[in-house]
Amino acid sequence: MKLEMMRIDVHAHLWSEDYLRLLESYGREDTATQRGLGAGDSPAELDARFAMNDAAGIDHQVLSVSPQSPYFPAEQEALAAARLANDHYAGVVRDHPERFSAFATLPLPHLDASLGEMARALDDLRMAGVGVTTSVLGRSLGDPFFWPLFEELNLRAACLSIHPAGRDAGSPLIARNRMRWMVGAPMEDTICAMHLILEGVPNRFPRVRIVHSHLGGALPMLLPRADEHVRWEAPDVDMMPTHAARFMYYDTVAHGHAPALRAAADSYGVDRLVLGTDFPYQTGAALRRAVVSIEETLTPEAAEEVLTAGEELLPAGNSSRRFRPSRS
Image 1 (cartoon, rainbow, N blue to C red):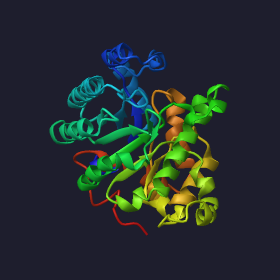
Image 2 (cartoon, rainbow, N blue to C red):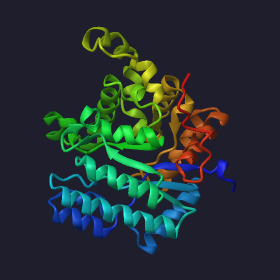
Image 3 (cartoon, rainbow, N blue to C red):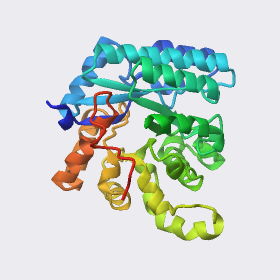
Image 4 (cartoon, one colour):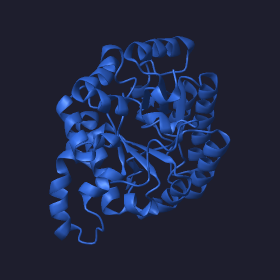
């Protein structure tokens, strides 16, 4: 199969037991949620994953460790965990280059260390881009504190994959009512995308290929409302949210919900959507549904465009075809 026709899943996970144990040794208490799901690196797990991908018509996955990101107050711990994760991913990709690419993780919030690890991951390990979460130890990704990171990504025209942090969007109402992932995660997507827009990040750093998870959460439903409200809530914004949203990209993880996919396609444009599955949280029939729902909801031409859009994330991708810095 030619590269330009590959169906590439940009939202997939794989965690090694060594990495999860290291996070636990530094104080993470939620790594059990990543175990026992078939998302490890054992031969049996990989064979099962490849069989499911083949059945679903997925040729290639771009891996990320989110939400188990190596974010710790101690720089030494954050850097050790990030390097372990990136070296592990580099090995997995080297062993299965036809099946996997990977997003590098960074030792945030430590900017100098993160910039150094980004250079190592992209230049030496040849990773497909960088993966971060919607917030870092409680600080929004839209905070100008992170602009040095965006500046370097902009210079590289690199891809930045953004995944919910799993921190309840900072809301006790979510945390105390068993809604961390069913409601909290898409709220984190929504808040992060809007904060980036309000801080002018898509316009300030137009070459960064920002990819949000889960269709951007509730963003498709909120853009016209946001356009009206910025006039008095954020009058300094230099670009209307409806327009700024089209400077970014959104994966199609929607659990087969056709109305959500149609809303995103209508709000952003089909050319802003890329295939995502959230493997291993969608496997088997649900993994197949992640592809079929796109084929059944969009026109054949639009569906194929979305399903093959992630090719630009590959090191050998055709940079002229997707993720263009100029938008209409």
